[in-house]
Length: 123
Image (cartoon, rainbow, N blue to C red; front, side, top):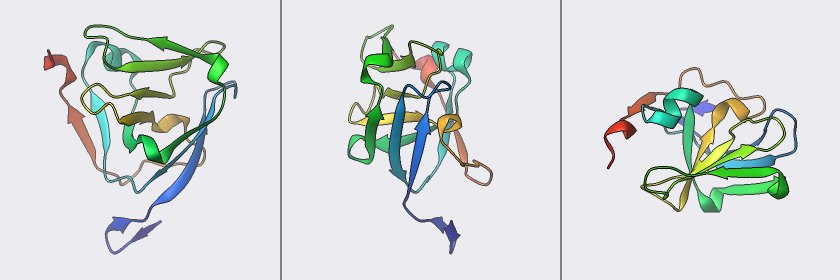
């Protein structure tokens, strides 16, 4: 929903491919990001940043697999069954999640600005 050039806060549900992991977010989609770090380049996800207070894991805690690399600060989560990457806890802002918008139900990213993040240069 778009009004006067801004998006209103909406709630979306998302899941991995097999449905074992289900979650809910609330966001107004100020922007989407693509990152050029070594893991993001390979998974090719389009992300929205959501504060932890706007994220709720509905089901699938036992189906989550975690991957960490480099500084072991970010927490990347994958489904143990289907391998899909639905979200991660961010490195620079650990009270936020990066949500893979391709895992959201009935969401079309058209018209939302995309910012290219330069994660490859993070030390």
